[in-house]
Length: 105
Image (tube, rainbow, N blue to C red):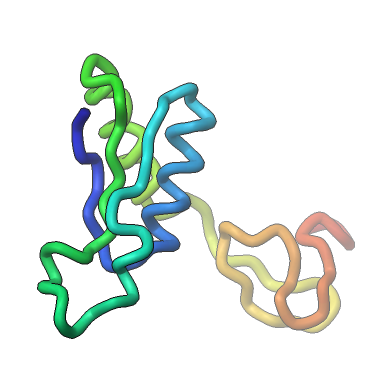
């Protein structure tokens, strides 16, 4: 077993776990429950960790991790309905719900 990620951000750990499992890797989160017990438990003993079962897939798992941490390419776009500036990773406007592809975008 190899640890892939240690982070106080449980959402980040869970997202990477989903990506690894989608690639067919068995993995688990250590310290998932104790993450919220800060105080009497030292931080290094309560920080969530993501581990993979198969050591032979370490390089593949680390590449998936790197890819997931890269910013998305593209340019911000302007909503065709309300004019709001939207970041490139989104396909619809957060303000009015219009799709990116509407009205020639």
